[in-house]
Structure formats: C-alpha cells, structure tokens
Image (cartoon, rainbow, N blue to C red; front, top):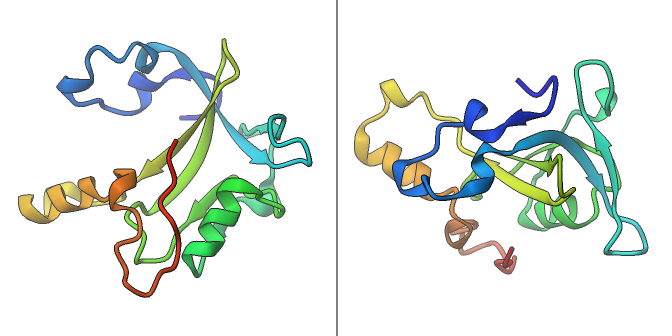
Length: 146
C-alpha cells in the first residue's frame, strides 16, 4: 500500500468527524527519518518495495525511552517502531506530505476488530491518542506535544 505516494484516505479509513481535515486527501509517502545535528533538517529516506532500509525494517522497543529515541533520533535507521505493551499504539512510522515535505508521525493499533468486543475495541482505538500513550506507572517518559 506504500509502493507510491498515495492519498491517506485511500489507505486509512477516517472517521466522519474528520471529514473537514483537508490533508487526509493529500498524497503522502512512507519514509524513514533519522535525526542530524541540525534538528530542523533530519535525513529522510523514502521507503518503497524497491528501496529503503530493508535490513532495518522495524525496531522492537523494550522501554518508553527507546520509543522516544526512535522518534527523536533513530540512529539505527528503522522504518517502523514496535513499542512495548505499556504503550498504546502497536506500531509507529513516519509519512511525508508529497507537496510540503512535512512529516506526519503515525500511530497504528492492530486489532482484529471483528473478533473483539466493542468496549475493548473502543479502548484500543483511544490508546492511539497521544494523551493515552504510556499509561504504565513504571514508565518515566514524558508525553510530548506534536
């Protein structure tokens, strides 16, 4: 689904209350983002089936601090981050707006929605909201604004 730049709305279904979000119909591409010394200019690599960090596809984070490191640094050049269970989303990745070049941090929740009770599914979807990231008392990770 990320072979070429695609409209987000053709990849992900958006809720009806997001109908006025204009960028959902814009073209985005899957990218790997790596921090540089200049925080305003990270290295950005487009990921397709034919190019990208094939040896570093996904990083399995063990702690919230490792998730933050992937978001802010990503020295290992991983395309995806798979956070620990205490984190709400099951996968994180970046996409780049094809026109403006702006980066979008995506958080995905992998649920088999047809096999999960509605209350559990609703809770799972809510955990992809940044205010719900890291609800574990053991995590000493700050919530971050985007």
